Length: 320
Image (tube, rainbow, N blue to C red):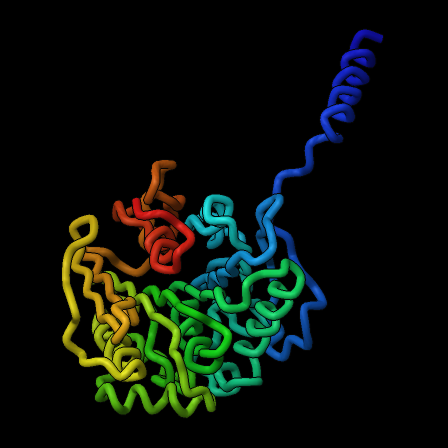
């Protein structure tokens, strides 16, 4: 009887205060988001009480990872609460790719209106409509194969994304088959900036303005060669019509950082070279400003949180 009275009193107080507390936000699977020609799965994390008009971030996992593990381990889930944005987490299936890699190297999956890029675009459109998000503030980022797919999305849907973060990724158009993909990953392909830019220009009829691009690479990465950072920077500076010489260089947490600014002074392209880091997502576990992530396979504690720095660049997280 006493336990019943305690529960009754708690319920009564909750009603007087406006009802029982709502369930905490959680990652949930979304079905029926579109035609889904790439046969991907969609997961979403939306903070409780998120107002309309907030940004959307798409975060793409790497090979052997899944949406939930990457979303939490990279720090994006916790940062969605802090930065007040919707987080879309596409997930590859083993039926599409045995290692659960996004197929950044298959022409049928990286052509506008087709395959996996179109599936992800459908997820974005669904999230914007469902949450009343700001369609002008949609961003995409990913690790490894997710980084390669990020480059593909920026090239094929530049009208949909305001910016991107490519982590241990590959330039768009480097490969069109699985066999070619290995050479692109290591040692990498050396093209001129104009040749790389032509691949982006051919991916859509879009004329600009082009998404900003943040490029991250470990200098000790033996899966995706560090040369890919240079080639990505050449691709996207050429797309923006900028020289390959940085506007400014500095260090962040001791790591080399280069910035390429557009005519208005905004950051069009930037690069981070994480000295001594292997293949993975840079994280900095902790709860202080600027920190995020949970260490694990391909989630590497280097005292610098890539997700936080991207949120700063995109304007919804404060400077740490």
